[in-house]
Image (cartoon, rainbow, N blue to C red; front, side):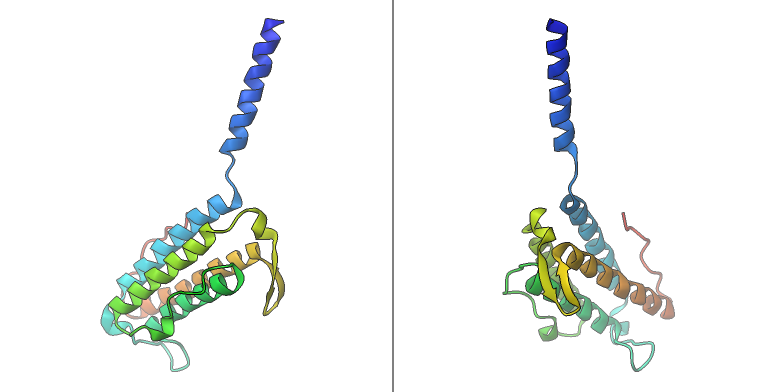
Length: 172
């Protein structure tokens, strides 16, 4: 009988430990967002300041405008749909120097990270009225990440057109 008691205790303890060891969506998202932050900032740092005003065609945004746009979008999504604080960085009020844009971009990523840190797993299923219709907060997170990735892809082209090697991929 004692053997069974020890065996039952072992399985209960093992079950408790394996439940605690499971990562949540938000755990994984936070890691992914930190990596996206570092990777995007590497792009901003890689481009020489003289090329921050470069645009491959007149209808495209400049390199600096791309970065401001990325920052503005994550601030808008975080504050409008994810419950972020209403006091935040305004990318349109930022100057155009490399130093100013990188500082603003760092603040915008930190603001988005703070907003994500304030979310709970349960809140991710909550639907919000988005411009494209009802969307869960989880989908807003996907949208925010996808938007950063989309514009970072454009920045690769800008860097290559100016013969600047893009940062090595670190998407994990």
